[in-house]
Length: 260
Image (cartoon, rainbow, N blue to C red; front, side, top):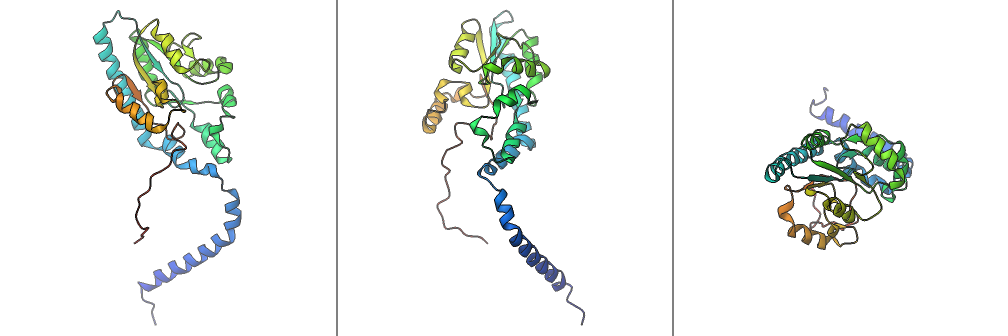
């Protein structure tokens, strides 16, 4: 009797599924032994490093920054002593390679104990759009300050990294690293310039009101109070890999679990 053509592929699929399940069951202990808590970071890292959507958002952020800087220059006049402040990590430079390496080795990169080595020897890449925007700001005579919490003890290495990436206005006085709080470093820039723009991937790059010790509900309230600044003189970039939110409780749909 000739097998039913619709049943035969289904039978083969069923046998394959049983075979796969048996193999998976046999291999499960070894596989489970390689799993670690840090693999929970994989989705955020994949989105941040590999997705076209993040690259689009980064380019969009720098396109908006260029427009807003053009408007600020027109508003203040060409002879005004204007300045912008930008964060570095995940705003101008992408450190995803370090984070992925640590995650794959089941090491919690949020302990930051591998960061100094990366600062000295790592090779971060430019965030899409960052180079063009900073070159534009430089060409317009706008002072650029890089305010970052990279370690000051590795400042020479950071300066070399930024120079190697071709970024403008890189120098000892314009790259302000970990030491005084970021707000104090921002205030120092404002003592000598008219500050017209801040760029960063965490709201701590814009105001002391968003540091990690501030509860998230208060951060949301502060954001609401400054909503008119977002996309105007506060340009925010996406970072799904770390932030003051990383221990936040998730909210789930309160309904019976049903699959269909």
